[in-house]
Amino acid sequence: MSERYERGMDVRRSVLGDDHVNRAENGKTELDGPFQTLITEGAWGTVWSSDGISARERSMLTLALLAALGNFEEIAMHIRATARTGASKQDVLEAFQHVAIYAGVPRANQALKIAKETYAEMEQSTRHAVR
Image (tube, rainbow, N blue to C red; front, side, top):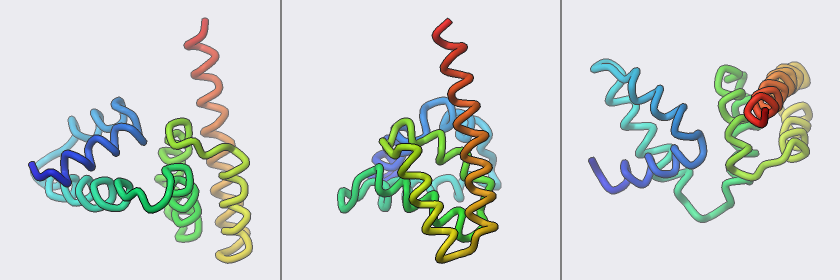
């Protein structure tokens, strides 16, 4: 694999976690293998690997863009990633408030609903892990 792919895989694992990436890699088929390579090199090996802005800022931008475009299926994954990127709940709220003003209240409302559910799951998981 290319250097960009390797760098992308490292960043992808650091942001999304080994469990998520391992599931994606184990589920890879001949059909989606090239797509997985594309997102690993492009999204993770180029965009997320850039030192132009912080992972926290990148996380906020990603969540805002997902919500603004109505790509709700990836919001929970990126909310979970905030535990690794440093984006706080307040950061996420600020991002979704921008979505409400610039892209529409219904999209921000749906994104906040997903965020609340995901944070609750994360907190529940943390409580169980501590016991």
